[in-house]
Length: 409
Image 1 (cartoon, helix red, strand yellow):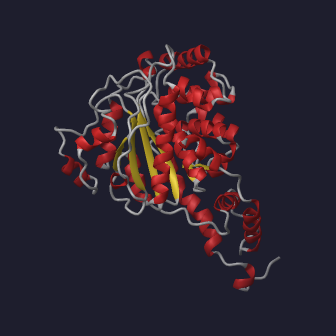
Image 2 (cartoon, rainbow, N blue to C red):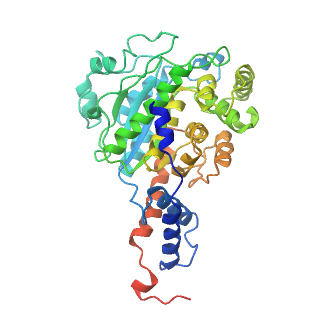
Image 3 (cartoon, helix red, strand yellow):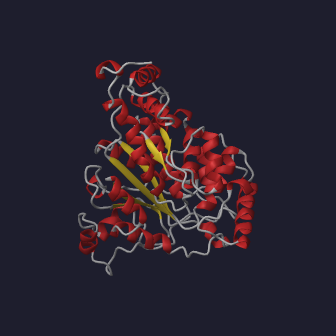
């Protein structure tokens, strides 16, 4: 099966390639260690690629997985659930922060509806050609979107039963890394939002698997299209609540230490949110040795899909640049499936959400940027992208002492 074969393909970093990178770093025209964290990063990326120097992480592709959450009913955020779908429209029109940062970085943007509960703003009231013109992309046929996604948009009250793996649109509707001009939408809706995890499992195991395998599939399509690095993005009102539950489940840390204020909730809402996370964990007692079960009981569809994206990238020896708390909660699940997947992960930034620091510590990853960001979307990962590129470019372009005729100490 796709998940099992992907996990089996993930291997440790190449020790001989890393040794070559360390040796090369020692011969470059700079004091040893003067580039700080960039030097071990370049060594690790060399080990992932298995060759020194590794390929430049270019072109870059950011993938925004979007989903809604039944736990929204518990009052964990003041934002209405409809904002998830509205923000997808903003992504596709190129008007969000992630779009601005992606244009700056020259990265493509792919938006994946893996579990949005309300109809997307693509339909008779919106001219698909006009939407495409606004994003400099090809026109999108709403009928094709619904058909390709097993009709996820037509019935927001989707069945509570197990689902088969969703169809994913053809690659022509997925942004190619060589074409960063316009965002693309992939319709891969597993179900119209999760169930309330304080009442029952958020997903069935089949639904969780379908979301994970959607992420694996998207990773494969983008890498085959030429992507040199994948960046994680997310959109889902209320999704920091399942993220906090996932971090607590995989690390054993108390919910109070993994739960943050998300979009900036007040004290009363924050206390309710912590209680909701604790209640869900107490109800399900998820087993961290069973990552699919953890994703199913207390996760979200975008968290599961991001887990698959990370696994898919690791299996293909392509780095994945992690964004904030949603991404690192998914990274914990990916590491539980395949510990060697951590070798493909680069922590883009330290989210202001406390669960992000807990998760990064558990993974043994140091973030490249710490700016107090808590937006999501992939914004922190995009800001860190030039740092990753610079770390690799040093190995390609900086002269050695011998070649430059520079005396060593």
